[in-house]
Image: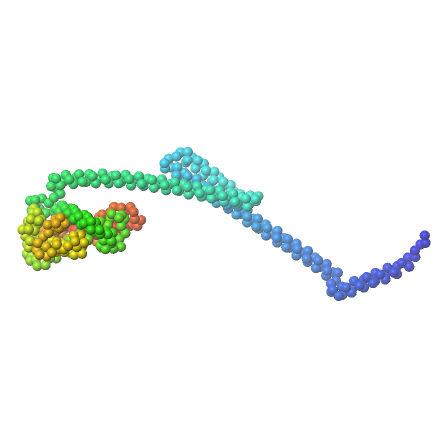
Length: 443
C-alpha cells in the first residue's frame, strides 16, 4: 500500500480547525460569554445549590431538636401528673384508713421521683432520647391525661365521702334537735304546772325583776302566735293566696323554706300590736295620766286589776275602759275591712265595735286574748324603774348575737355568705342592763 503524504493531510486539518475556532469565537462574541465566565457561572450555581442544601439540613436539624425537646417536656409533665395522682390516692386512702392503698401510692410516688431524677440527669448531660420523638410525645401525653383523670376520680370520691359525712352529721343534729325540743317541752310543762313561768299572783311592785317581764313576754308571744294560726286558717278557708299575702307584707324576701312565709304574718301582727308600746298611753287618744312620779303605781295597778279577770268578763263590765279602747283600736288596724268581708262575708264584728259592743265570735275572742297579753305586758313594762323599752332592727342589718335571735337556724347553714336581716319578727326589749333579743328572719 502506498504511503500517505503527511503534508497532504495537515493543511486540510488546519483549515478545518481554523474554521471551527473562528465559528466558536464568533459564537462567543455574540453571546458575550467567555470560557472563563462560563466556568464561573457554573461554579456559582453549584455553590448556591450547596448552600440551599445546607440550609435545609439546618432547618431539619432544628425541627428535630425541637421535637425531641417537646417529647422530653411531655415526659416530664406526665411524670408530674402521675405523682400528683399518686398523692391524691394517698390522701384518699388515709380516711378511711387503707394500708394497701397508702403503700401502693407511696411506691408510685418514689418511682416517679426516681424517674424525674433520671430525666434531670439526661437533660444536664444532653442525652435526650432522639428516637421516635413523635411517638414518645404521644405516649407521654396519653399517660398525663390518664393521671389527670385518676386525680379527678380521687377528688370526686373524696367529695362524695365528705358529702355523706355532712349528711350523716345533719341527720344526727336533726335527731338531737328533736330530742332537745322534746326535753324543752317537758321542762316547760313542768314549769307551767309549778307556776314558775307565770307571773306570780301576789306580785309586788318592789319585787319586780327582769324574770317577771321575760315570763310575761313569753306568754304574750305564745298568745300572738295562737291568734296568727287562727287567722291564717281563716284565710285559707276563704281561698286566700298566702304566698301573695306574704309578699304584700314583706316584699322581695327570699324564703329558705316555703313554710317560712308564716314569719311574714307574724311580723305584721307583732308590728301592729306593739306599735306605740314605748308611749305611756300606747298612742291612744283621750287618756289622762297621773304625774310622772305616780305612773309606776298607776300602771302596776292596771296590771294587777286585769290579770286575774277573764277578758270577755272585763270587756262586758268595763266597755269604756282604756283596755276596751285598746282592743277596738288594734282590731281596726289589724283587720282591714276588705279582709273582714273576705273572711266572714260581712262587717258585723266591725259594726259592733263601732257601736261600743264586742263580738262573741271565736275569731274576736282569740284576738281579745292576744290584746290582753299585750296590754298587760305594756303595763308591766311601765312599772319598772327605769321603764322597759322596745326595739327592732332594720332590713339588711348585720346579724348580732347580742341583740338578735334567728327564727330560722337554717339561715347559717344554707347561705354561703353572712346572712343579713330580712325583717324583724318579734321585737326586742331592754330592761335596765338586760337585753331580751329580738327575733329576726335572715336571708
